[in-house]
Image (cartoon, rainbow, N blue to C red; front, side, top):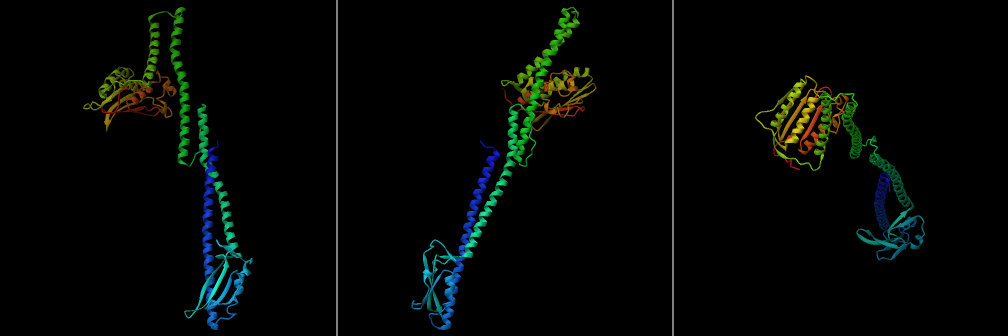
Length: 461
């Protein structure tokens, strides 16, 4: 197996080398074709120049002789081509021997017919009349001088050198790019291994400029935070349940032992106190059973049309005595012309309202206020409960729906099981309703619940 950086580097390097090879090959072909075309044009100009020169010689002398234009033979020999001058009857006036240029080291041949002697014959005209012919022969269609060969070699060397340098630069760039891509992924991979082993405190701190990789890094960090928090909740859950169960049992055990030993008298006051502890213990068990019920996969909702205003009014009356005993003002406001009908399980929705109002009364100090408002907006029925209680710390808000989460010490000092809001959230989830809690420490709390109006798609089961 290979690391992602190694695999990515190999892919980038191989792709770059292939691209550079093809580019170099295409550039070489293009340059060679252009250069050969240039040489062919030079050769054509040479042929035209020779014809024109011999034409001027004939016009000057009026006839051909053994010395007519013979001075260009030296140039032809040095350039490795043969000249043969013929008159208008195609009789040879003078000519060169092709064998004399075979081993000429000054010029090389280029083309498919290298080593094959070829000739081209051109007419020499004077006053629009053919007066002779010049035959130009050479080994190969195009001749290269040493300068031409050096030029082509230099181009090829530069192409090779550029390719090598480009490959080296590509390798360095590939290593850099692969590191940019692989470093965050490798770190996320290591963190995921740590998380799978239960090391939930590990985090990725190397930010990436690539959106997708940064999203991946952020997501794995959030996953780690949630797993760490869930692990802390799990440990605290065991501790809290143990504490909640042990406390009433210890009280009962200690009191009964004292009564058996004759330390405490067996009277109505003592028995009433013990009965209250039994009731408190029973409430805890009931709450845990309620939580188990709403979190169960086979829960059945008995759906019916509910007038939320009527249900809310009846529950609010039940809390009037409790709030009055605590000197807390509770007010309910809604439009009397509307019923605020929703579809749901009456008992479950009633439990939601009871839990929310219970929390509001419980955490609102003496002479505080609790305002309950009900209204409609579009296809929603909105229930808002606002109190002037002790509030919730900002860092505790994300976790208030967790099992047995009680927040800071001030909330621990108030009696409660810590699962009321967990039950509320699960019931509302089953009804496809939304709940939102806003709060500031010492400034109260606002709970907003949004139900779908009657006609929503909540079903039984």
